Picture 1: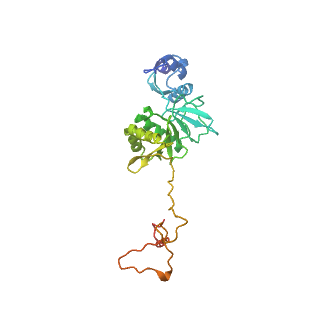
Picture 2 (picture 1 turned 180 degrees about the vertical axis):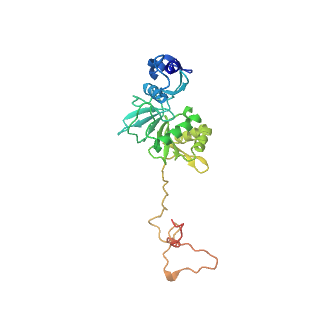
Picture 3 (picture 1 turned 30 degrees about the horizontal axis):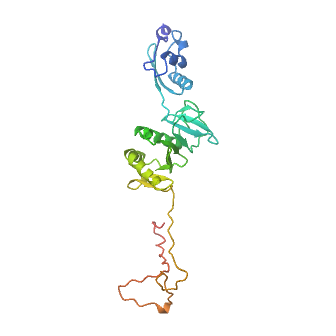
Length: 296
């Protein structure tokens, strides 16, 4: 009597994604063979979800059993968010959604998606999360992709087409078709940084392009600068050279070319009280107290 009451009699698929049919989803769930033949009491909903995910990584399924004889499969389609280089030599491409789930572990091309470089990933399996649960590099990428999508930055033009994740303290994004680098820094205050980028995108791109028109070869956008967003016509890490003071080899000491006359200790000029003296000799700053905790 129990078997008769609880045998699987109905499989509901309330929402079918475009391009799929309810029957196809039921077939890949493995429940077709149980319909009107086996009890629904012992159906493992987790196993059913796993079968659907393994059969088609683009499908995200939630399976629920309703007593006495109904199973409901709620399905949504995962959206492609980025393409990640992985493998010993970064020779493979894996397409993932914004949550880091692998949709295609061996994609032949990026299909126009944003590419994430510098990831230390040794394996990728369809339908599972990229990396392991403790992978901070993947977690940082997922957080960044989520915010970029929420703020609509990925739809802006010129579009961001690559992210360098090799240094988590120095995350960089690159703009397609333009020599622009966007310095994100680490993921602290990420939402604030990206909101500034989204709000001032047009002005930032205009200023960056103005540097190129002036003859500079690149432009760097700093999202972690004090005061908001700063733009530089130089690559990140560029150090400005300080010009050395010019001297004339034919000039004698004391002339108006900037040289200083040699003065012996006994010939020091008299200085009236309140007047300041200038000397070209370097001044040594005394060391602070050795027990000073602020000594750097």
